[in-house]
Length: 637
Image (tube, rainbow, N blue to C red; front, side, top):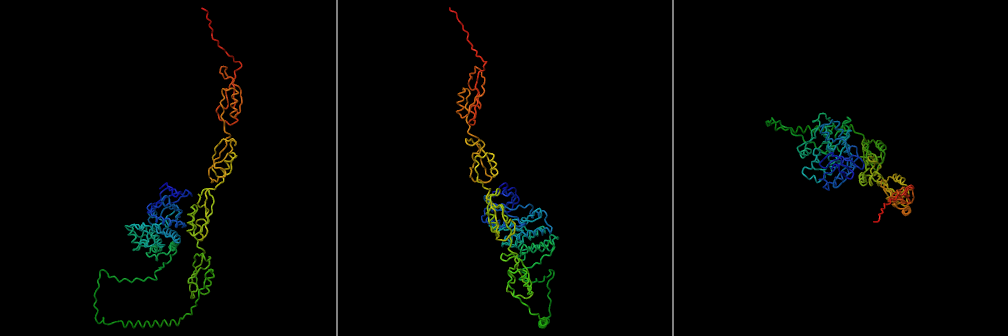
């Protein structure tokens, strides 16, 4: 496909990569004049209508993601059965290529890359988008060291495709599958966290946690086996980084990091030298401790039979033991009662929690502090409650609290802000869909533009990348194409003046000449198209310019006498004039006839042109000689 133009504007220059689902090309956007990457769906998938629909839906959802660590999606489309996605072209290498060459990365650099991938996942997860295919091939490293994640949402279309019914197709990238994906269960945010854990493991250890002869065996290990810590392969891996990897790789999703932000926070703590947060197991309170295994018997020994004397077996120790236990319980009860009497606490002060909604944080904290209640502040966005005011409390209003209890106050940070998708240069329908999908209201105005085609976005406000509240208005200016001009009347203009005036209007001007009995030479007769026509800026105009009256043919009067010549010339609409005579030979027969005329006969000339003739005359000194034949007179016989 190299050299082809898809979507009417993307010129494919060179091949960048090939995957199981699509090929990627380095391309040039001829409309906006920039380099882009174009991912073209393989024909086998293009024939699956259900897959194509999911593919386009997920691509459009991913196009709404805007973050420095996410490869932007600019456009999607279809061209003669070829489905494609237009993406930001990232200069650099994939993490897969780096690992092939370097095997292991320094622990600090590996943590930096994983933290930036986690940042990208956080943005996607907040938008409800699960990547499903985090792997080194989808992590791009730019020359300045920044990290970008590509193919957000695209794996969803493949994951739901009928292709999964084919043998072995479910394990396309089994090395980075989560246990739930390998078992065919739905993937969620924690599946991406597991895959990121595999990638971080590979960067530290130089190899993935599980490998095998085929994808099925690798997937089985993800489900049933625990990985070896990365530090076993690479002793330079610190214990905290070991712990982060192993938590991300927990088989049970509930024991992994709950959010990508939490994993990123631990990675940033590691990078800053701070201790990572202790792990809290959400299932610990409900999980029973396993029973201790029975003691093992050394393989080189056997049980020995020991004979017990009958009298010893008959003597039971239970009565003595029960007596001792009873005495101990009575003693403990007495000591407990004495302690209660000696250390009886003062009556506990209670407090009924009021409704603190819409109170400022300071007022709410003071109200609690006056009653001996501690406050824990948690901020969160809210459309209903203004910034700095309390949204709710935990426990809720009306609860009875003891002095010293802690109340969580949820304080508003104002409406949650979302990044505005950049839609400049996109077609109006596509731009509106992207903005409305992101939760914004779209208003449009139109204006002409010389470079932006009709129906495409010239500008937007707020600009792409700005953070604003959902429901805010985004104003788009839509091009109507080049400006239109009502052509004025240019008849009777001199050609040069008309040419200058039309050129200044941004029109292309040609000219042609035409004879005219009424318009002087060099004066515009009319325009094509005519005056009053609506024409777009950059259009072409033809000036019809007079070359003067229609010419007449000069009669050929050579050999005519003066009177005949005069009559013929005047009849042709020309003027007649006799010039100086021309001497001719007396024997030439040209005397008293037109010997020369200017202009020449049969020449086309303007009407009223002067025709000058010269008449032949014999020089005064010329004489005529007559030869008389000799006469022979014969004598008579």
